[in-house]
Amino acid sequence: MSIFDELQSSLQEAIEIKQGKAQASRITRHEVADVKAIRAKLHVSQAEFAEAMGTSVDTIKSWETKRRNPTGLAAKVLATIQDNPAFFNELASH
Image 1 (spheres, one colour):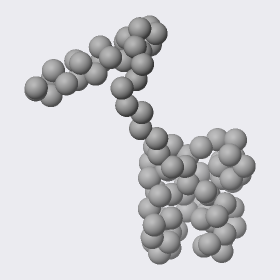
Image 2 (image 1 turned 180 degrees about the vertical axis):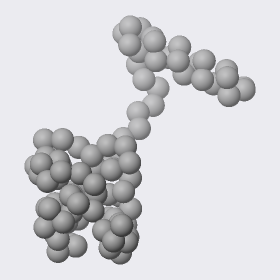
Image 3 (image 1 turned 180 degrees about the horizontal axis):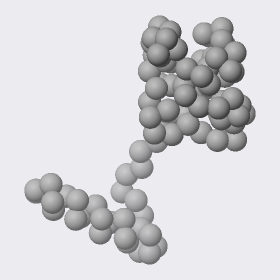
């Protein structure tokens, strides 16, 4: 099956799911980082963490209270920091 055929099949499946005609054949879930635990392990303030992440303190607070979840690049950066805490120091230095 070509990449075009796979994409076309996936789009058709998405349309059928949206219309309620089918159930998703697979669901991918990613673990949401525990931002408060990561920050505590690093011994940094919310302000320091926000600055390094390039976001606001309010966003960090929202992530820590689980009102919002980090997505996209922020989620990947948090996963990297969680796996390799030394990465935070490099991130904070830029």
